[in-house]
Length: 507
Image 1 (cartoon, rainbow, N blue to C red):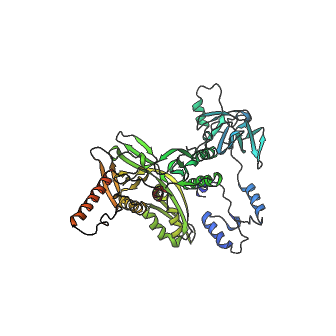
Image 2: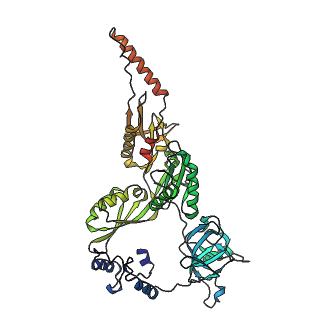
Image 3: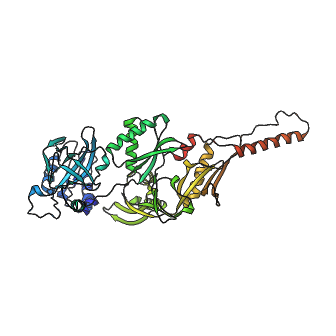
């Protein structure tokens, strides 16, 4: 709504569900008035269930929503209609088995006909319009689409990534000296390349389902160009995929579709963000997992993504929300009272702080009354480092995480204690350690141990067969057992069961 107000768009206030017995129309109307600054008689009262007031909404849409504008750019107003260059914006796209990629477009200027040669400006791709049409409401084939219309263009492209939301479609130019510059002038403003901001590993509980998972992700990719995935192998969870998402909602939708539509039993790891690393060569690299983070000696600076967060809540929960955001390293920017009882809180938070349990805690402290929206702000410096977990003095790559330096002890202790409760006892003593700045070799081999626990060895009573006699015999047997345990500890390796990995990694 705030974006609509910023863009100066016409907003029609409508109150729905007025047929409900508990509907408080007066209170809701006053909230809308306070929010939009409209008059009470401008608010439409509707029940979509019974149909009451729906016809009035349609009439108001026709009279109050302005007609589509034609954006001709630098083209002279005297230019004949059929000579105005095509400018169509993609707002969605689907993949059709027979037509290829079908772009849903709004035509701002010019016209497009079947068999026209097209150019997608943002991705610099060429294609042909094999079919154009309108939505009536189903797709209905037409001879052409003109300025002011919304419709579809079948492109015959086989890859959905070529049709990016916000990109501009125009007609391919013939015989021009500098087509790139001319295309750039025709591009509609506001196009931004979509980038994945949230990453998570997706694995199958049954290793035999890996091929099915790969096929399922491929099918989803055909209808969702924002989904990114690449193969990933984990010693803990087997073969799977490292997937990139636009946000938490996108992650939820994809995993739910994989489960419902494709019948997959999945393991989804704790989501993480992409960090920007400045290395010793003054180059910036993007990493998507802790395993990609270089040793501390090779890192000059680390940056993490931040988000602008807006929370709408009843004012009685304001204090609890402030405390929650402060605990999550958030910065309070502004507070707006848009009614006597409701406020909008504006914060800036690290994206990693809202990935795992922030929304659940927000609902808990507000009893479900708060709503949350967020958008990306960019990268800012972060005081984080890699936390490694050693089991039997061997690093376990799959358990490595990136943590804030001042929270590293708490995070390390939590993982160590969880592993201690889950890992089975061995014939030798097993140490579990959380280490910062771990290096497997070199001058600074090892690292700073911040949390540690031990699983005692299973012990057989070697003196049970003795019935008395010299005490030295008993001491010899105990000493022999002690040496054996020491040798096993030096040579033994710990096989970590999958349940232990899941306890730490699973979302």
